[in-house]
Length: 120
Image 1 (cartoon, rainbow, N blue to C red):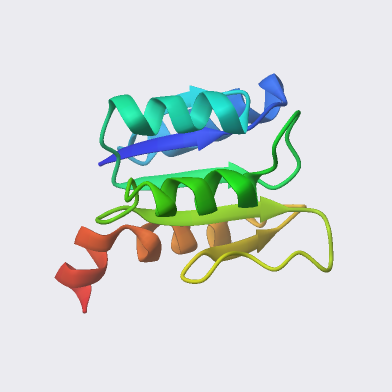
Image 2: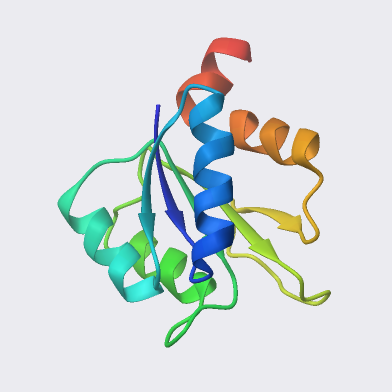
């Protein structure tokens, strides 16, 4: 399962990449919404995980733009935020910081469309 992780904080991106890879996922990292959208235009992913607060455009913009371009047709999406009043785009799971690792991994597995169908 291939995940695109969009997080501007390099330490957090590396930590989450290590965590997800230890669970068997293949992870591609990106530091901005614009870069993440470029990756979605070039490659297919099973899941996009994005921080809300990013330099330039935010994670909500990334997911809305990717949806408009039909880049998320068979791709799940999770948004991470520390902000209490963020509303994710329709169909996007929201996870609040600080992350509870077990909860985060559960949301990740539940958000991948193929895993949802297999377990559904």
